[in-house]
Image (cartoon, rainbow, N blue to C red):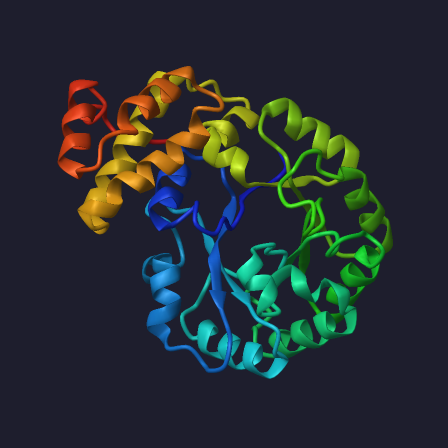
Length: 319
């Protein structure tokens, strides 16, 4: 069986949702949301806030290894922050060359660097010098900024810099998240470098998973929004039938309980609604629940509705 990995999803797959998704099971490892490196060496507490799994052996509560992702454009600063990070013994270190967010792009981070292959190599080489060989070291890239002209050059630069594996999201920055993903470009890149490639982009179903593997010739697949939209997807891919909505309900209960413990009441409802907005893509019941939750503002009102629906009485799903 190929490896199935959980993608870093800024603003979506936070530590609470990572715990829920990995508790269902099926993931070999994942990557946390990015840590932004700008003009200083960050304190340990910054890494721990973004990736609290570092306090648990760099694993989620269910034991899935979680790697830490750095985002920045200065090779020396990236190296210095990697030096600080490795003292926390992460399950792996990843470099973000794919984030398409306008704010990140304007500040010359993520996908903004895909026009400068030589800078990619310098950043990776500098970080590689600080990451011990026993810690996996990867990078995640898109196909380019507004075209694919430098896709192969960027991948070759990252390999030359010393990464162990490369994750490729099969879209450019301008593509955003619009379908289709350009899986054929992952296959082209794979022919031009010698390190393993992990395919990412537009895998929402088991059929998508098989189609992506066939188109890219990659053994390993990273799930992003598809994993958030269907908490059972990784296990479905592995051939396990966990059921439909009744198996998702305990995931919702566990997530809401985590949100209520860690998020201010006035912000809690928004977190749940955001997730359900994706889950309803696969489950009509989630659409109905989302519609009923939409007008509710107070966390206590949401508690009452979830109790009335029997959701908070559901036992958490264990892999």
